[in-house]
Image (cartoon, rainbow over the protein chains, first blue to last red):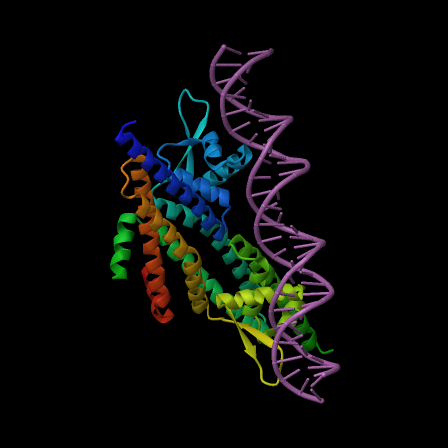
Length: 180
Length: 180
DNA sequence: TTGCACTTTCAGAATGTTCTGAAAACAAAA
DNA sequence: TTTTGTTTTCAGAACATTCTGAAAGTGCAA
């Protein structure tokens, strides 16, 4: 084995170690968020993969069962963070992640808006509507507080909508300028 | 019982029903986020309470055990979302929530930055540093991807820092203007 | 120093989430 | 049609989180 090959193997091993560490840590971070650890790990794996992976590849790399891999791949596809690839002549389904960070951000933001912000707005609107005609001091305070929350959340929702509709090429330079 | 009293009682009952619904739903939303349901419910309860509540009040209102109430009150205090009140002449400890929505937002953002964004930045920096000298195509792609993530997360972190340092009286009108 | 009012802790129970592995379903090819 | 490769489902197991309730701890005041 040549010196060159030896060096390459060492580098390859070093890279693998860092990559595996990245996947593991991304899983930990995912759970700190509200996200299933395996789902976060599969996402990390696909984000740094150089080619689409099959369900079996994912099972092999992360040492997880077929059911687990399958379910989490579907879930990720549901979020729009990965897409499935069908290669002609191949029966197997492959998956690849969206790698553009700005697009990822927009996708995640849109989903969280839908799953977390919208329902909160619904609850708050309902609370305000059903108490604003009451005159007991407690009810008045309640309406005031829930209305303040509602207004804030609606503003945040609109801001996020506008940001997500923008082009990265406009937003990022603008943000950097605003920061300085 | 006078007509007036009857009306007041009905309103009181209506208010209670909406308030309890609010607390319950806030708990559900909390779990959709990564937050313990009881913790979210206690927070909701204290947000709309007109006076500070004791541990026993919380136990009574939410029908939960002392240990549960205690632990989650401490946790909320750890986040800085509630503070404890000691009344002179009283041995009992009371709790009240920060009600100002902007301050709440800043507190939550600061904590999430600390608990979720900082560790992510740490992981990503480490990945970039440990692979940027490698020349294998896979390693190069990995560094590129993790660096892009790092830059994005660092930018988001800075933006949030700046927002959280601002005055509500400056940010909110500015945001509203920007929206239109 | 004893009793009292309250807070804190924690083992085990209850509940909730995620994972496995095998069977069923499906669909392309033989 | 049957075979073959693949995806999907899901019952039960494994694991993780949250909750209860009782006991221990704390410190004031009689």
